[in-house]
Image (cartoon, rainbow, N blue to C red; front, side, top):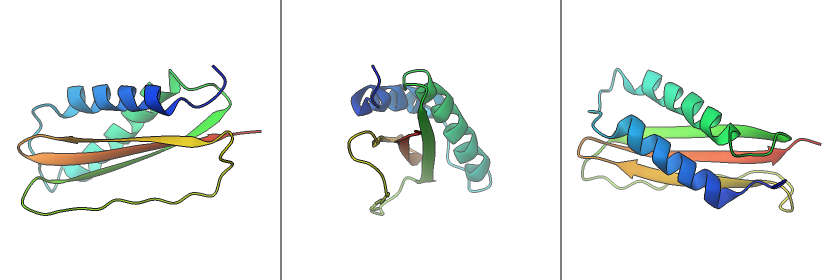
Length: 107
């Protein structure tokens, strides 16, 4: 109960992305505000299942679904005993999303 549970947070992210983006059509003009609102949504949903001493960093990447490939990587300086992350992807016929939440224990 006192540690960041990556599997549980990942399930929360998957559900939130599926419900928020299920039938959304990609729009270049609307992608920035959509990514920002998704990051806020994911942060609030993750906060419900993460212990209170964790600070959360949410990152959302949106793009148009086409014939391209994409590689997303991240690095962080943290304590591997207490800090962790969860990440998931979502795609529909029009767009794709990659969401990552880093949980950093605040001492």
